[in-house]
Amino acid sequence: MRYGLLLFDEPKRDTSRKIIHIDMDAFYASVEVRENPSLAGKPVIIARHPKETGGRGVVATASYEARTYGIHSAMSAQKAYELCPNGVFIRPNFELYRETSKQMHNIFRRYTDKIQPLSLDEAYLDVSTNYIEQKSATIIAQAIRRDVEKELRLTCSAGVSYNKFLSKIASDFDKPNGITVIPPEKSHEFLMALPIEKFHGVGAKSVEKMHSLNIYTGQDLYKKDELDLVSHFGKMGHSLYRKVRGIDDSEVKNDREPKSIGKESTFSEDLKTENDVIKALRILSQKVMHNLKRKQKHGKIVVLKIRYENFDTITRRRSFPDYIKGEEELFQIALSIWEEETSALGVRLLGITVTGLESVIFETIPLPLWEKKATERKPDRDENQTRTDH
Figure 1 (tube, rainbow, N blue to C red):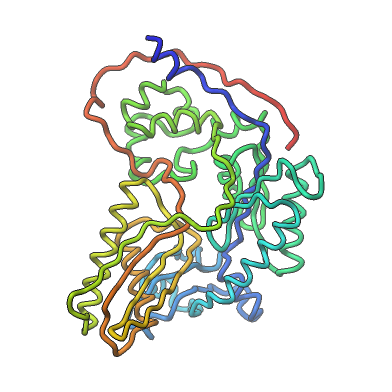
Figure 2: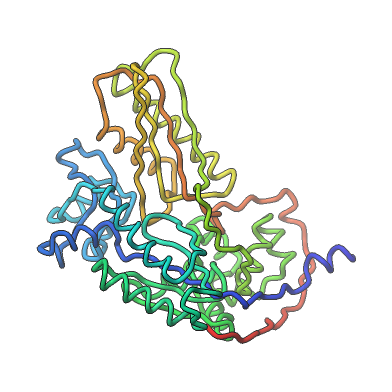
């Protein structure tokens, strides 16, 4: 019993930190509109036109005008064309996007050196202590947004709270070009009213299982006992129990090298035909996605490595604003990169890597063998509230 008390005691929140999550608005498309103002107000789709590729290729991102047609990142370019035949398809210019991202990070560094990039277009900033000695994270977030708009002629959305989990949710809450602040004294109210599918990281399969347990909002999740959640969701039950209470102790890590999961194959005989390359890419995509799911990770950056028969080696990467969700999406992205780099030379090695990883919060939920065992339900507890200046 002593172990049970230690495991399931009501956890305490650390509200001492001040975290900002910055997310650029339709980043690639917005950069293209900035470079060519005649595109303003048009459905811009960042992908090669499917008529140029025989129907292949994937959407990197789309402007908000294009999104009204149901177009989203990692969708096939052919499907995007079917949804919006009048869409303006633009081949991605990743050198330009990377340069703009560097300029964005230069702005961040005026305020803090505690920066954790997630992809080219978003990052966490810990401004608990900062270069301008400003106590309010909200004022800093507003200053960053003004700097970005003035200097880069782009807009971004910001979320401000006392941990990464809440700041990420907040930045998605009022897009585009918005800011949402969740101070400690408001976090419980905010999370209780939030639809379960709005929790960052909740996938379609997870939502279906939660609905089967009558969990539709944060309030429903909050009422669940920790032991009950663990019985239904395995090791993720502990995380679910803490997140709905506004608890996330993960630090903003300014790692120099992004974490990655990849797989590569060196072939005994060089691949000579496109069909051979396609088969190899599909197998690699399957293996990489299997490893990502096994480690409960997902990422937004895909790297393709190609080594030709003359031992020349190239690597090409593509960044997306949304996480790569499945094997087919990963395969289509890798294939689109290959089609842009294809050569008459035989292929000696192929590799696919997904980088910029984050933990999948609720997407993959292992079910323990003892799921159906009855568990004793504990009484609900009130959340401790602590106030700080955000």
